[in-house]
Length: 93
Image (tube, rainbow, N blue to C red; front, top):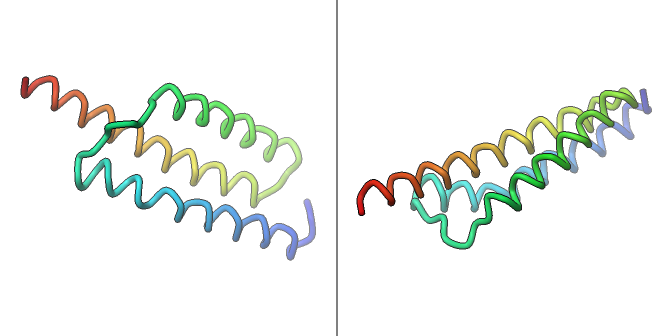
């Protein structure tokens, strides 16, 4: 495992990265706005994050593991919110 200060930098970067997704979560879950979101793109990002998670496990990096689990959770929440909003929109038509 890398030195604690190195892992701390990685963990901080992961946490800051999570904050970048908060406006998107609010748009999807609170305002029910999903226009322009590509679930295919988000799915590909989720696959890439999963591979980074596996890499983090293989190199025994707590920061990489934690950051990718958190980011996958956020991406999953956005995808689920968009899917639900689109489904509700279709049902209302």
